[in-house]
Length: 114
Image (tube, rainbow, N blue to C red; front, top):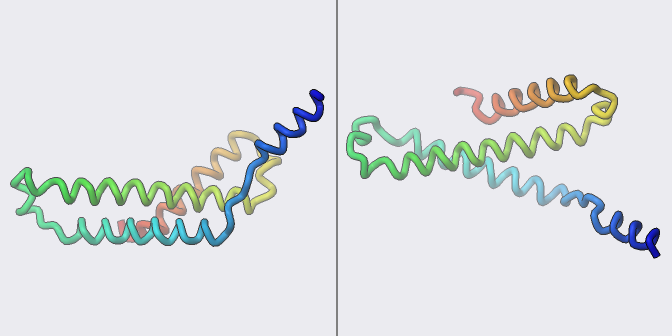
């Protein structure tokens, strides 16, 4: 009975990979959100920022840009890690260094002119 319960729990908690199509859709939506928010920020003039009532839209756009960009970087870095089977033989320090390099590279791809 215990072995059966353990095998049922192992099967129930097995990781499930989302379909590739779902990942692609999420990535494209995050990219569209980040681009739209960035365009909103680019359209604002500093002279309009003197009035605090005008601060809401740029603050929301900045928040959306940061959130969508961070999620997009996390998705892409995680996809890279899954595609790289040699990562299992690395030490923790090497793995952390590779992850930080991947994060920096993906951030540069998302915001190339920043």
